[in-house]
Length: 367
Picture 1: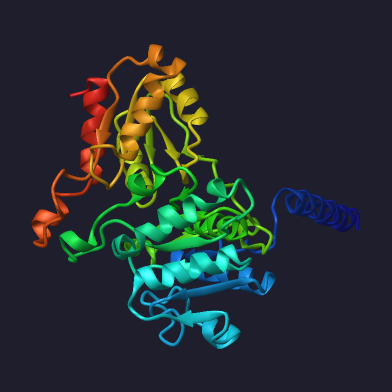
Picture 2 (picture 1 turned 45 degrees about the vertical axis):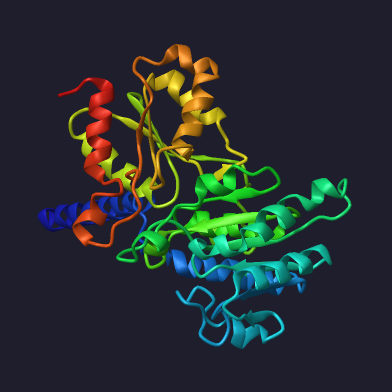
């Protein structure tokens, strides 16, 4: 009998202990299934940004070649014509100077046009409207005629489209006072910067990248909010490091991140700065980073002469960071030639990850 009572008490004690232990485990470990991170392609990020701004402000409209019935040459405007109609999403003839001029005039009259170039290579047909009309009118009118317009479309090299369709216009447009120029990298950049550009009272050039349109990126809940904006004129540190600073924009930020992962394998920690905005350029984080790392490498797809990397280099030379450099600033750029059509030549015309890795090693004098 006593043995039986002892067994019951032991069982009760063990049961009580198990309940307490499970209670502690419940407090320490969540039993709720974790939510998968939201992914969004660059194309959908741009599309959703325009959709939200068209809905928010009836003065906003989109115009360009094939943006309406065909949903855009790269499907960036997919569904917008069906939703907003042909007064808000407008197909134009193949005449960039004509429809860019129409868009600038509409902006002067108080509307907020988004003028899409099928590629920024075609913007050369309209460069008089972009520079002489859009960029200069606010100044020439003593501030009485604002021009709230966005010029957007794919910039830089695509693939297999040869010399006349593969130029980077980053330095062309960022050279001109009166324009703001943004160059987004990932989906969050595209949503936040394009929405800010549409709301800005000044003309803004938004340089996208055709190859990136189908690329998916994780995007935060905050960035999915209709109220999400990225301030124009602010860069972002994509990765912190202590040995070398890498400065880039657009697609080549991704190349820098890949190179940084490879460099980390040999003990080199690279700090990566995504410029996001090319004009006005946010140089303070670059200066602070170079003071910390003592080395700077710039990376871009454009030509070397008078490029974005050259501007970054000049700003470092003119800043206190110059005295902290332990090696000359080095640039990784596109080759100084018209883009060739042959794939093997084209591949070697633009920066690749190994070019960045080798340049960093050269800067740090690492074999």
